[in-house]
Image (tube, rainbow, N blue to C red; front, side, top):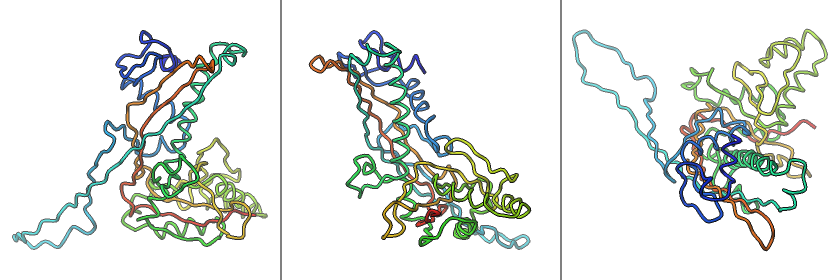
Length: 338
């Protein structure tokens, strides 16, 4: 990865990665397929969902995918030595992912490169940090994107999974109630039963504050025996509630793992509230979330003599889609514990 980043920011055509094109005099260009894959993988290391969702490396700006559905109860009673001439049909549907072009710009002054403890290595360090932040920002817009938003220039780029799920999925409004086992119970009741045969593949996804509220409610029962039972009901193996980095698994309510997603958007569930005091919960299959990333990542580096700075610009294209909205439950307006 260090070698890749060095190639990304190097000046001059001699140092460009193999397979590069669209080169300007100041260096940079389109990374070759292998370098682009590695760069995408590096960005995804900083995200929570990339390793779980269906990430698609796209060659085109827009791409269609066929999905197959067979419905339910296809078998029927057979009569001996009789061909009833009935064949069941297979439903083919198409969904498409349209990617949007996003950019990341930053600059370093010559003084910052000269007057620091890392010396020239600072440039590689900053490049790694920017790749990390690019991954975080891409996950943010893929979750919370909404083209109707006007205040945030990133989130209005395209519609993310949360908005897509609310427009076609099963939506349950909790009307300001706080999170407890009843929330998971109601969410599972909303999921059509034909998907429940794949219960081990389902996941609850929820924001950090709701994860904290849920684990706090399990920890604060007064009687030690009751606490053991409460932990078992929460899918925890002991009275010690697990801890871990962002995205850790916080037990399995009713047998379905609960995963923290720190970038879930928060909002006001109470119009009279002065701070954001609630958010959403998802129940779906991780692979139901489709994340399209166009393979060609463009990175440019240019020295600006009049400013005595080095400017960097990265371009990529990403888009989101949900394969089957019928297999998606969104619980909205879940308030935080006071």
